[in-house]
Amino acid sequence: MTSDPMTSTADARRDLIAHLDFHTEAGVDLALDEVPHDRFEEADAPEEAPAPLRRPPPPAPPPPQPREIRAPAAPTFGRSAAARPEEAAGSARARAADARSLEELEALLREFDGCPLRFTAKNLVFADGNPAARVMFVGEAPGADEDRIGKPFMGRSGQLLDRMMAAIGLDRTGAYIANIVPWRPPGNRNPTPQEVAVCRPFVERQIALADPDILVCLGSPATQALTGTKDGILKARGRFYPYKLPDREIRLLATLHPAYLLRQPVQKRLAWRDFRLLRATLDGTTRSA
Image (cartoon, rainbow, N blue to C red):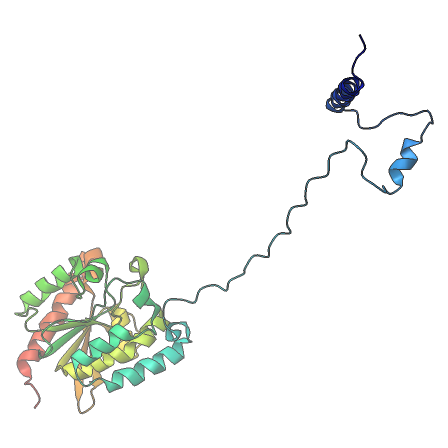
């Protein structure tokens, strides 16, 4: 019996392919022939065609896209806060002069962006008490309690100030209270000279609109800001300074700040002398028409 030639050819081809697959899986990538070859020389020569049984190299990764570089975001506050202090102070003077009432002045302060303290404080601390009172107290800057509540002298210093006023027959219905800086400095630090200079036009306008008979400065910063003296508070206290309002001159009394008295209780005797002088002055003067 003879075999079918077509079947024999198919079987031989299948066996040959299986044989080649075996060698390919074993790592054979070149076939040997009767003629020797210098494989190093062939490696340096450019290939005219891809070698058989060699897998194509993986596609090159796409080139990295350039990252978009964005400019840093502008500060959230207005341009005035980034301006030079003298420019911010000039803007404050112009705006404060436009206020025709304490309510207008407070609204202007809420929109004013020339003092960076506005952006670190929780609340504007404008004033407390009676703006029609004969005496006005001016302190330095709000603390944590004042910043939280939005009124001046609300913490331990405020409690002591209330007792000091009560000792001479005053309370917050008979006095008006403010600060030279209406925003709390971070960490309860002292306001810088630049911050005081920017805010001073507003407190000066506030004093002019309240129009008290006697101005009482609590502590050295307020005294120096409103009188121009360079003296420390222990030298300046107990003295009257002239203070000019738009249409008249009043007296300004310098005394110790309640916060200082909490740290130095022995100095309360000096503050008591100053408050007795304030009481005697109020009793000896009448409200100007």
